Length: 483
Image 1 (tube, rainbow, N blue to C red):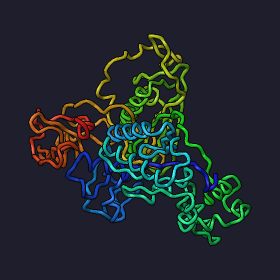
Image 2 (tube, helix red, strand yellow):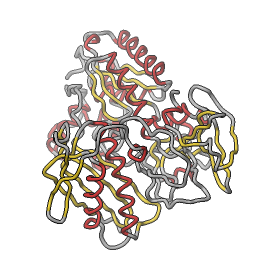
Image 3 (cartoon, rainbow, N blue to C red):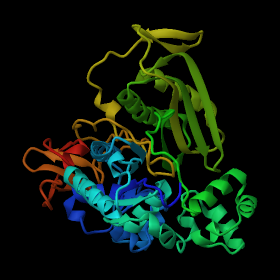
Image 4 (spheres, one colour):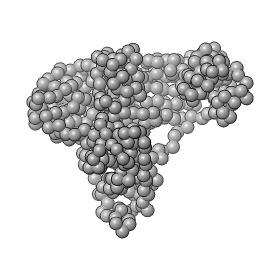
């Protein structure tokens, strides 16, 4: 669509989302560098605060490298149940402001408000200002918003607005703003295509826009090249539309050390199934196909799948299938990564008292799990040390776990052996009848240091307690955001 269109698309992007949620709910960290991700030798940064980015730490970077660049950063494990809850509030605000909404991931979305058709840039500026204020009022978090004639321009505008800003690219100034930008600023141009363009002297969006369409197709391929050439020239008529339901639900974890015993593999698969099952139940769907992925120490990946004649959302059934598949998927050598996914969805399990489970004689029936409150073990946090590309939009739904009694078992970390001397780990959410909600800063030698604070309390005090204090129990991460 040309730059003269009356169309306005806006892109909202939550700033350093994971780290910002941690800084909001753990106010002592508000102005400090924060890294979210796995702290082990194979951990990966899932989110970095702007204070950490100053030192070169970035999402998807190995945690060891990020810590070397920013050694004074606070490293915290991801709390995906909390991020998903905050994301739901953000999307609810967007839905209240625009009936045309397209979530892109857990922390960003496009809107195309019908009441902005034909609006002036000033009117769009006012609309975007109200939207950002509404998001902050509802969640306590900053958001950057960009607006332009299409999705590509809006996305670039939100990047220019960061952090915590608003940028409206008027249709008349579109070329002047986009042309000088690096060609990698275009959504869809990665390292390979960017290097291919650099080799022929094209380093800016304006340079790509000025190329002959046939030349672009020759360098980047017919379909891709044609689309990117159109985007570079500001022609973007892609609609803003709701995304379809996910075709699979998955979870995976990378282990600090390779698993070499099948008992450890089965235990890990069972814990991963807990996270998958929680999201399956939250979606109200049943799955027929279970797939297990195993990556060995030499980075060889094996997958095995099995499809049942009936859909199920019974945890025991899904776990039994996944454990059996793991026996076939695991090759020689230790296991570096394990993943479980379910697919082949139906809206509801079959209306019967029994569900199909595998047996030596084929698929037989077993009692289905009754409806009712979930076992706390089935609502454990997502088992994830890292957050590779593409996982941002696939986070678990539903509320977090109810408070759990203290103890060495961490169902969300199947790769770690229980340590009876350190049942508490840094980043754990806890609550105490005298001191309220807090988070563990460190533990050892029978003691645990907790900073008691939430988004509502502001910076709180640190207290060192007996690790066996019966009043100290694990808490729902949502309690750090809203009481």
